[in-house]
Amino acid sequence: MLIKQLSVFIENREGRLEKVTETINENNINIISASLADTSEYGMFRMIVSEPEKARTVLKEAGFSASLTEVIAVKLPHKVGMLHQLFKVLAEAGISVEYMYALSSSEIGSMVLKVSNSKTALEALHKNNFEMLTTEEAYHID
Image (cartoon, rainbow, N blue to C red; front, side, top):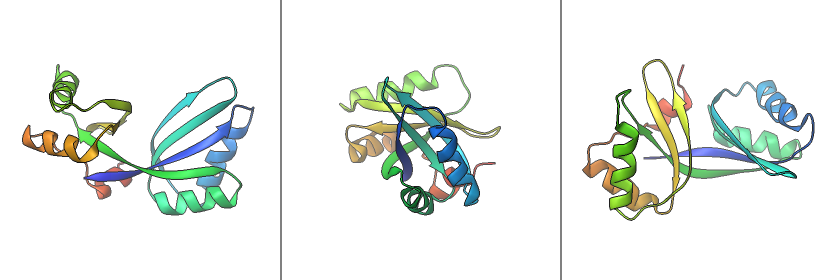
């Protein structure tokens, strides 16, 4: 199962990140998980949010460049070696990981992955008994 990730392109200037989160907060949207990658001039703020379509709309209305991307959220038990097993399955299927970040609660540990081929990755993960987060689980983690 694929979930929607919100990506916001922002200038690397003081206060811009705060403005993004202010816009999301004012619209009663919960940020479930986030990752920030930057260069000296700009940043890419990636998030799993409770209402991805609404978040994209309100951010665009506020003047931000926002888009939605389909990603995989793989459940990972809190046990030694699980991340290695995940990467092993993907490598054996010829899948490369473009980027990843954690999404976690007290009950569920997960990795959000953007991969080179989502369909093949999902098939390999299912075949090897990995469980994916549903959209309901991903967008409403407490």
